[in-house]
Image (cartoon, rainbow over all chains, first blue to last red; front, side, top):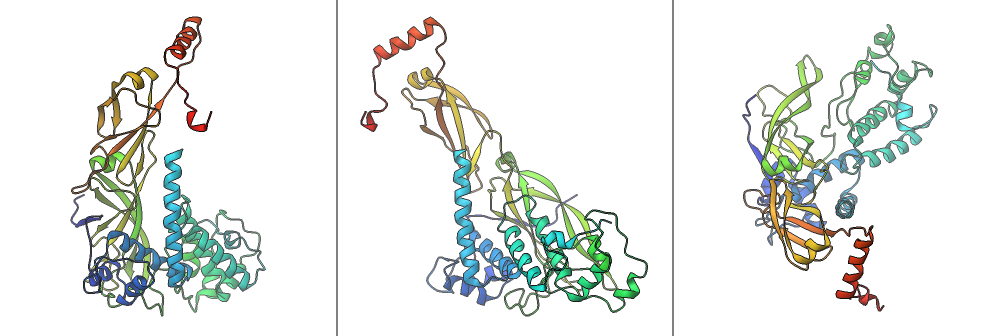
Length: 99
Length: 321
């Protein structure tokens, strides 16, 4: 069984521009723009032309799309859920450390 | 095939109103959404909930489903009645909208194929301008810490939607070998180009497959991002006098130099012994746990008394005692 496809680890060494991240996540520019305005995504760089997004941004966009699609939440609702999920993960990680 | 009790799945009464069904669905969908729940069965439960709702929210489908009677139990062997096709399916059911994932054989034999997580109508954010590519697939892959430390090859099985032509869609398991690159960490995604679903028409490009890394629990180590943590039991004399101790790491045992007068809870670093990728370095942290031997014999008790005389100190001085 040979692998004939390209594998990319979306890790902390990689960043993507505005259009690139829209293509990877297959979402409209408008969504990414609104997510930045909502403070859900915090790209490096002062303007959309120079924005650089990290791998965490990809995941946040994907989760936002799924939450909007599956649960019918709006963007501020998805933003709140993302922040709470991050906090939950942080607490779970600390709990694992303690036990 | 197994009968599915959709009312039980949504935990509603058989005479529940449309509003009650919607409320129950919304509550369960939030609880078991795979991005929200850490429950091992979350994804399966979420699929079941969506399948049940797909039937019970639709007046026509619910009526057809109810026509089997109230005596069926979940899991019972079930065949649709012989006149099912002419009674209910002649006009055909339409399945779509909020449908997610693939539905069970039970559903498909009654109501026809439901495609997976599709871009719903009127949803402005999904797939705009990308309709010439098949859908992306998202899945999780569980690996051990060793798999990440050394890199690994894994075979996974994906349920893919396959277009059999003539409007028929089936779900078929396909295995795929995946290289796990060295140093991947929990939560990271691996993107496998062209391993998503096929495009809607022949010749269209496949979507991509995103695999999210999940670490299996390890019997010895815990992990935070790239760093590995280990609690190392040591004796009081090793802590007091210093020692060289063979410590397990993911790459095998290494010698750890314990400085003299180390304390319980002290953290020592083994540089580069964590999960390292091409450009990132992870460390292993060893937390000392000093274990105190019991004084059982008269001689052992005397030794402790001598220690008390020779090394008087108050560990509770910080408490004002």
